[in-house]
Length: 184
Length: 184
Image (cartoon, rainbow over all chains, first blue to last red; front, side):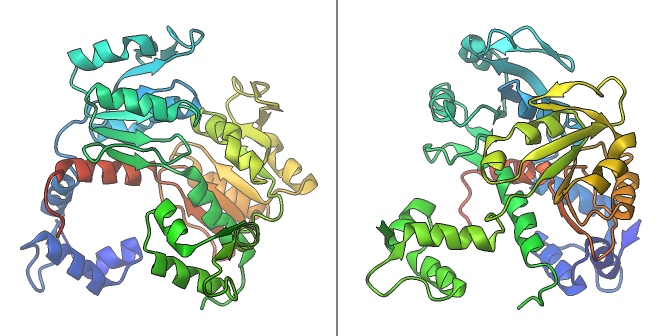
């Protein structure tokens, strides 16, 4: 199946010429007048995003955010499967979340030494998050997806991507305040 | 207390001249060589973002994401207080989440007619999300913060901000795949 930049533009609500330019950056895709092969384009974008291989994740923090990530259907479909969850709260240890049983954070280093873990999801409160990141760093963790609402200090070898839910809520709030105004 | 664009730049990891330019867009802020008054700057940015007045929210969907939003401490601090939660699952109706008791979605329209609700948080599965959005639209809801993983169709009068957690995870995955490469 083929798709034109025109149709992609309509579906994504983007300018078709911008789409052609972006796809051109991927290198050698599409021929003038033929559009793009959907399967090949999808595979290529997936490879670029690192979605062509599974990325086992563990989650630290078995609260609402940790549970939401563990259950998010599209993550599993894309190869971001949660293989273990940890919490330091004795009341949560042993709890079942989906197929997983929450482990105590005391077992963290031992687990990391024995299993392939690509990504650590940090879903702990702001207080204690930096301490946990330092601990992960000492255990050799290289990639962290951080939901704790603060910017963490880390070495250059460590990749840390912050999710700040507030940013998105502030955009909504901003647009609500300026509703009806003509954009400048 | 005053702060210079230099110090703001260091704290935000941004170029000080970019910061001066951005703040200049707010209009009449700071004097050459004096820096910015922190309290006045904070108040001004808060007003621009609509954070100077409370925005009562209700949450549809009492699963992990809905619970996480209801409990997120900084939302409450910034005036985004959750005043009611709804679910269509009889097993969740009556459940306590923080100070709230989950209501049945059957009561939604009645609740909206009787209470000031600025924002509706849509934390339901993809399936059923569009139907719920249409229902909210008919009930006069104007601002929706959508966690359902799909782009919803809505009228121009309705503001819908989508949270796609996957985007942020894909950025992490992309950077993991290209780690160590020289940025172009």
